[in-house]
Length: 285
Image (cartoon, rainbow, N blue to C red; front, side, top):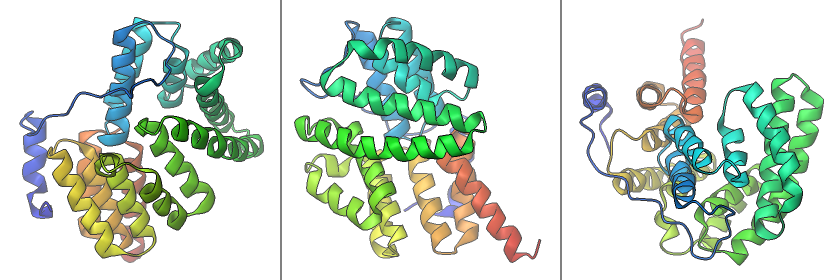
């Protein structure tokens, strides 16, 4: 595990571009249907997933999804994910309209995924337009749909790791941490158990269950798997763990560094706000 006292050095290394380790190229699952004839669109689509899920690189991920769509503007699945990650409400509204028009031409697993993704885009649009009640109702509907649709997809295509990761997130939201953790163990292949997202998520679930020793073990394994201090993922996982353990100083160092690496990382920014609020509360402010 990295020593928090070394984090200022890591700040310097990252700012100078001296990070070590190298990312593996994304590997699309064999046989999984994606409606694009562009190899480049397919490549950047999976790279975008790898960046956001495995590495915590939200900014790089959005850029990759944009590249995917630039190579094939009719790539509906790519557009649906771009609509999920963009922070531009007007762009998201426009993409939502396009997605709704294109949706009837799809069926099977791709349609099952699109129904969920487009529903999540609609929820975000409602929330950002301050339609709070409608947004909440839509979110509950989408979570229920995702539990069914993603469950069917991952059982038909067990090698599709990122739908599986999102399925675990849905189970966590709907059923709680214990069932989500059991589902990771039940549904993941031996190779997938070393997937960075699942390692980090297992740490988070164990943290929530107050199994701090197990959570730390997963966090350390994640750090070794990534072997790259310039990726935000492991820093956010450590920040979450230390925050739950009330080690606020350590948690802040990790969260600040993750935010420094990518200010668009939602996990890092959320944790920074929570940690800063806890520190202020302890200080009596």
